[in-house]
Length: 260
Image (cartoon, rainbow, N blue to C red):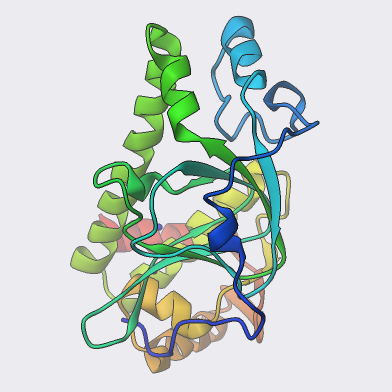
């Protein structure tokens, strides 16, 4: 649970990450079975045998700096990317040159599944802070799942997550007003942070107001005005990108009352 008003972020550094995405990955010392994010990421729900099979895959770990692009719209699809740390945004360019943000991804979440359908990525992934990812070769994962119903179920579940995410965005854009959209966004972010052991009520937004507006289908001024309204209602305290949810239950109740 993100219409773009600012130009897409472009790093002043040479962009080499997307080019490296097509290089054969190097082995990783850290395995899925010992990763602290295993309950949120690819191995979630797998048993011992399947976990051992995952550990046999050759993963590559990469660092992506703030503003750099991991892959771009139209790049060949080869990897599924698991976020180990940091935050990414997915976005695509509209015909008029504006950026449309389609999602935000944090530690334990997967990116790149948009390339499954056509064999090329339908969006770009840009780091909103210094990040680290695991690159999972899809061809190897596909081979691993052949003849293994549990692994096939995992891959199907990953694709289902994408469908659910797209459905949630459609609901946001089609049936909610500005306050409902922003409340839903903040509550969703709060829940995702809590699932990772972080504070559900106080956090720093890695995305700009314009990027939030792009994701939620709102103008920048509307996003700022809605934040101010929540502050006046004593639901939030806002200091630039630092957010403190003063009344989490109140924000939840207000949102639930609006969508009933």
